[in-house]
Picture 1 (tube, rainbow, N blue to C red):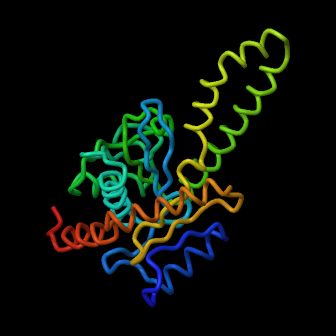
Picture 2: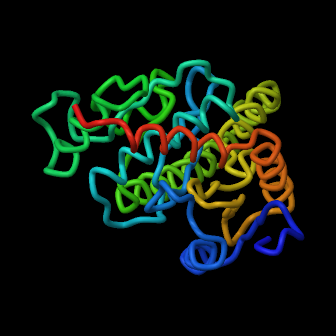
Length: 248
């Protein structure tokens, strides 16, 4: 990729190793200090919520989260087609006084950033569809991601067990088969392919180590959409413009 022989990278290898190599070999955009992994979560309303960072940066500074918010907003707008993405900051309550020092200082920066910032949000807001982009440090984001994946697997397993208990439940399951398939598809991580590493000079999509062929195929589709949408260029241009503006 660095030599121009490829436009994007899709990997299901070790996340830390891929991220470190991408940062050292490909480099980050001049105005971005920390790249961030952007995960997409299914919502009640059908549109996806972008959560970043979901594991690239365990420890972050407020300025990093501001960049994550801008990159997530551009991603939602350019790739997911959301005209004016609503951006929220993950905290333990919606009130401005809630949260730790990181979230309180980040809240101040995001209120002054040129994004559609709606304030603090909570974990339950991820799946409602009322917010398009949620910003978090990588430690918290990764816990949310792994918890959500485990919950989906548990729910599907419980449903499968309960629906096979009696003849009546088996008949009901057969009659509702199309609905169950639709729900499974909406919750299936392989539909989203992988998490793009936003902030790198070139396209890098990181997948699960247990990714199926379907997940890899969709990850390649995501990489293609990034390339066609010139996402890295949009991110660099918008963050560069913000960096030269005076602080309020």
